[in-house]
Length: 172
Ligand SMILES: Cc1cc2nc3c(=O)[nH]c(=O)nc-3n(C[C@H](O)[C@H](O)[C@H](O)COP(=O)(O)O)c2cc1C
Image 1 (cartoon, rainbow, N blue to C red):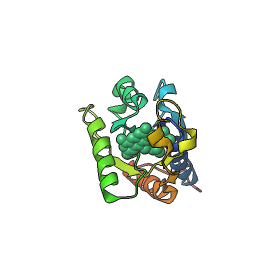
Image 2 (cartoon, helix red, strand yellow; image 1 turned 180 degrees about the horizontal axis):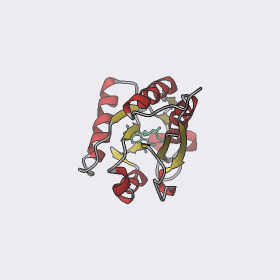
Image 3 (cartoon, rainbow, N blue to C red; image 1 turned 90 degrees about the vertical axis):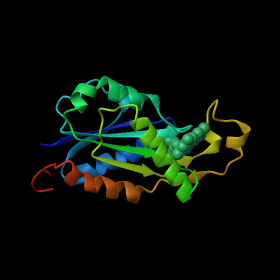
Image 4 (tube, helix red, strand yellow; image 1 turned 30 degrees about the vertical axis):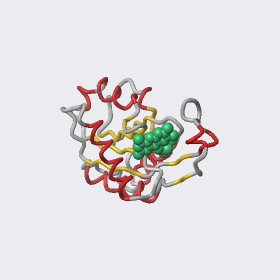
């Protein structure tokens, strides 16, 4: 049975929520899928495909996402891998375009890595729960934002079955 790892790199949890929606969407379609923190994955044995999700901070990926790619390079070079970034907390085309640029900039650090699909989804911000050093007066003065469109995440995840060329389990 096809098995997909959805590895995520998060700071405040929204990228984990998106990763869990990717995994549950695949599971509902008859694919064995599980979301796990990227930093905890030690082996990719048994997986048919991988999804990697990273939050974007200060125009960069989370470090765990970069380390995940470096640590697992031999296995990832033989598997289809999809990549998503979570970021924009302002709903403007410029912010989303900027976030796509940040995702691409991180990607350029791994010349060997060519994801079969990439996506950027809107992010979430809860100023009351930011920790140091994010809880500066400018950030704390912002209104709470939720631009994470879970329907868009589900739709992208649905498309991955064909992109990954996976065979759903019969009867699902
Ligand atoms: C201090 C700070 C810096 C951020 N920098 C960026 C950025 O450069 N680009 C971007 O698209 N989003 C940026 N964001 C928005 C986050 O990516 C967004 O809140 C995301 O949902 C966080 O994911 P997480 O909850 O998985 O950590 C920033 C957020 C904070 C609090």
